[in-house]
Image (cartoon, rainbow, N blue to C red; front, side):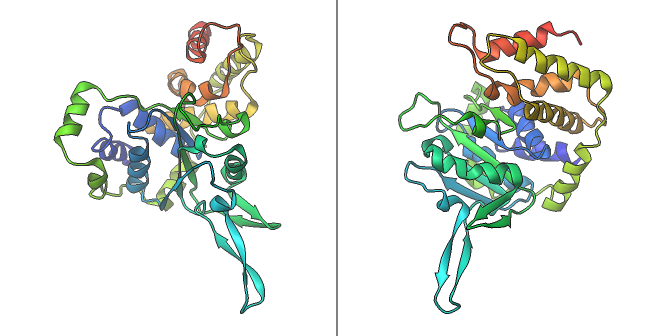
Length: 301
């Protein structure tokens, strides 16, 4: 199975992070965008490079800083004196995998330049629309909000990311292998491309045909409505979040070589899909993670 081959190839570089690898692939298959939040130096950029290499996708890394402008992302029209007309020069967003590195170090105005691209897969400049390559996958990395020089991502931006994951520190055996081996950045160049971009597009279409029974839909609705009726949250999950949860569950089933969704698939992706979309009230002592775990445990399958 090509997906299992991809997982095996990625595990050569990303050590001891099987769940995170599957979640990243799940997000890519779901035609969503991935947010990786963690401390600097734990492998966020390495994960993005490895994914693009194994899936044979064009890759551009864009470092977000406080002085980055929206035109630095989308591109700009420049007047050509010979042709006596403006010509649009494509920005780095015109790629298949865009690594928006440290996205929360840019100002909210610059962050918003990605909203249309992530949702519509196109960019509008000077009244004209320009289609982005397919597949189009944004991997945003962000440092914890308590670190200096960061701007919190607005809810509208967070909602564009289908999933958010954390890398965390490697376990002892994985870190020993990391210290004993070669630099992962050098090893990435030796990785095989398992799936081409055209094959990935076919797989993304196949995901939509993974069977989701009425019982699973009812289960999803119970989860979504539970978040909306729980006054410990500022607001519940949006319809877009619900559709994203369903599609991520379909992709999780596909990764595990099934053509139907089980409740376990929904539970496996629920945290990554929903935790960054929910916010606790100030009076609530528990974290979002604790509350969502309670919801999953309380709803009967």
